[in-house]
Amino acid sequence: MDNDKSVAFYKRLKEQLDETSKWPSNYLYKFIVPTDAGKIDQIHAIFDQMGAVIQSKQSKNGTYTSISITVKLKNSDAVIAKYKEVSLVEGVISL
Image 1 (cartoon, rainbow, N blue to C red):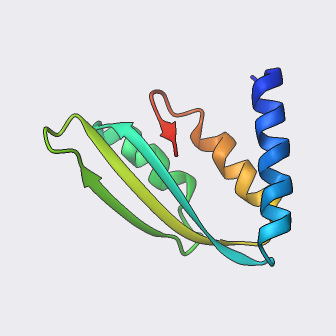
Image 2 (image 1 turned 135 degrees about the vertical axis):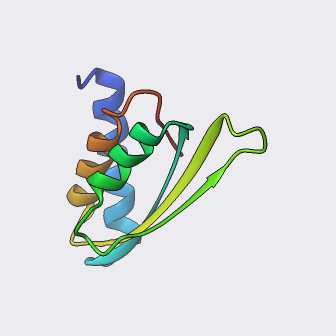
Image 3 (image 1 turned 120 degrees about the vertical axis):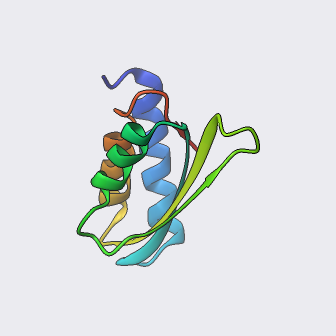
């Protein structure tokens, strides 16, 4: 489901990551997802077995959960691959 906007976004992100980071490097992902155990578990599963540090915090009224994930990745392509995997989780917003 790569439309022109997402292709341009990921291309720009890759350029920025390559300019500002030395690889391998820790990368911090931030997501907002509707508070739903299944969706939160899906995101956790994407980063399973990677040594990721995952922190979750529910919004004040419990409607949404913010998830911060710090994980060591080998290059900018690995960062983008994880964004694409997480984007398949319904309702997730990448920050």
